[in-house]
Length: 151
Image 1 (spheres, rainbow, N blue to C red):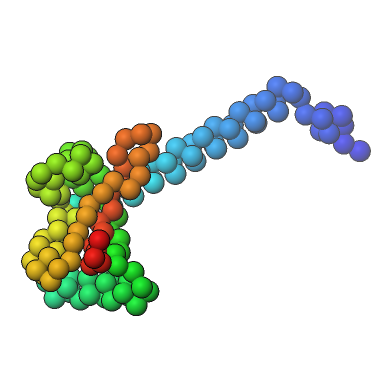
Image 2 (cartoon, rainbow, N blue to C red):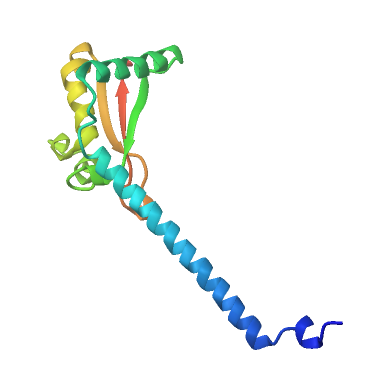
């Protein structure tokens, strides 16, 4: 029969084992947090560069999104959402609706604005870039909305 020390471990030993488990959990959490942060930075880096799509591919994508929205009875559609770090001022000019706000755009958000300017605006479409969330009370993500209704 096992001895009492085998059945009921010493409290000091239990505390050491618990501390090791907590340290392992903290290490795993830190590793996951660092990994998530690295993925976020990689995504922002990718979005801040040109998409690599041809004009024809971009037009086809826009047409598909708009046609799907029209079939669903909509007069506007959010075509893109991006972090405010893809603007040169973290979305401040967009939030304030300042003249020239479009000059703060970079990467894919800038490409979308150019596509609208070149192909959609002449056909009567409108575009809006607006802050769509305010984490901690500060501007967060920005949504790009294309509209074609009478409003």
